[in-house]
Length: 128
Image (cartoon, rainbow, N blue to C red; front, side):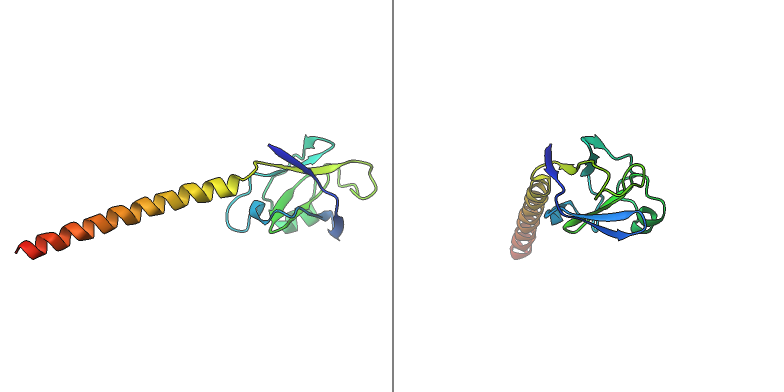
């Protein structure tokens, strides 16, 4: 696991704050993110991948990675800019690139097998 301190944090709305991650691959806009937010080294209770409106209205440690940012609330709905706690994100390094490599290998294999099948069908037609 890799840990990165959230240095740039801005108030968003309600209990929600936005931290810049610089890691768009952690975003949950396409699939659920496995990254977590740490408050003084302890994972926020979440839930993770929470709707942004719930983070704003309810808070209590909910968070969501969205493109290059993480929308989050502190565990007690205090202001992370003044509560004296440190916030960081934790994630698997290169998890997206590993997944992409596996997916690419699968599709390459699929296209290869499909191509071989088409060649076999063409040869059978030529024999007729």
